[in-house]
Length: 500
Image (tube, rainbow, N blue to C red; front, top):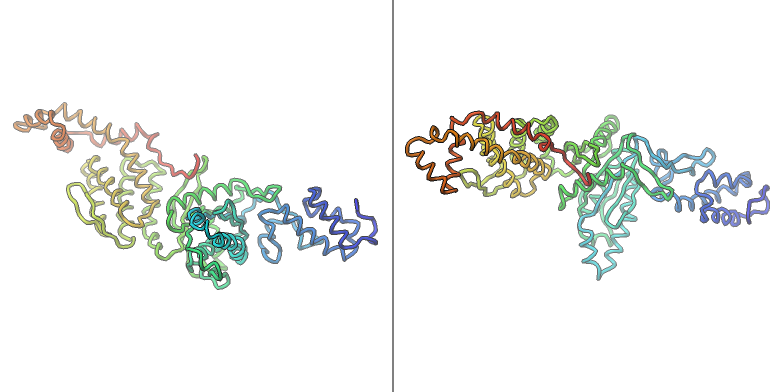
């Protein structure tokens, strides 16, 4: 049959479906509106309507890609946002191809240890099949229960799309619960416990990046139903950042827009996450992605990490100082203060550390006193060399502490690296003054020892250190602040994720 007859008689349901499916498979028809126009001659016959809807299901599978599984019954909110519903057939319609709406969110998830699992299971293919089945079925089921839709990408990646911040967060934490055998979501309506063959799979950790909720960042749906656009890319960069900040535990990073929208959504009708106070949004500052600054936060859902709320104010203060380029004094003081606060509130630890002039065990309460010494050296004594030595030692201590927050570590290292740019020039300026005033600084026998020490590098360095602390050495602060101004372009501190 090349075309439908103008009258309904003589066309069986089988013939009609064959006719429509041939047009769909050939690519001649790729939208429901075109399918409906083609079927116009037989639409007067009510028996043609179920056939048209079956043809629409075929069209969805071929051309809706990521969203092929959604329907008004299973994904009511997604359907309302993503589909232009047909006025005569409420269960059918055309998929929007550019989603520039505020109520769209994307989560990118990556399974840690997937490659290693595949290598270890290469002689037991049933394990690989089981993992594949749970990603396709169980994870999709969790997402559907949350009003979201998911799809597997490139083996160990899962992409989730939802129409609210509450839904996308619930789906993400639900997936983490399923793979990690945890119960962070705690929502009886969403089943995240493993059953059957899935019980034999090992515990997996995941990293996730969530973006959305902003009309200025569109999501593009291609002709084949694939996703593209900055929204997807920024979610991937946040996932990469989450993975770098914690490669051994599950971590979720999100844009601040997600946080703000979550709070708005739950003001009047709280979801289970809000009711149970199961998540805390920890401000992580701005990251630069391809020239665009994205305000970010960590979604803290594990009660063992809720202590981060206690040093949030100190971290935000450091963000502000860095943004305002307050390198003269404020950034150093804020960085050292942040280190002291983090160590004070985090889980108990004890490490042995080598510090200026002493070796001692360091526990949670120790850094507070050490921080005071460092700040005194910088602010009161203007001994910038000693102050930076303390900061370097604090970084070494942080590296020895189990589970020390990696973001704080990154900022400590970044701040130290920029101050270190000034050290050599600063020392040369001060040492020049020492040379010019050596007979005044070192008198009597000390002067003879000084001249002799020049022949011995190690002793000479000790004399230089003593000379730098002499009250006769002036303008130390002017020299230090002058170098900060001179090297201001090198002192800029921007947190990057992915390609610049």
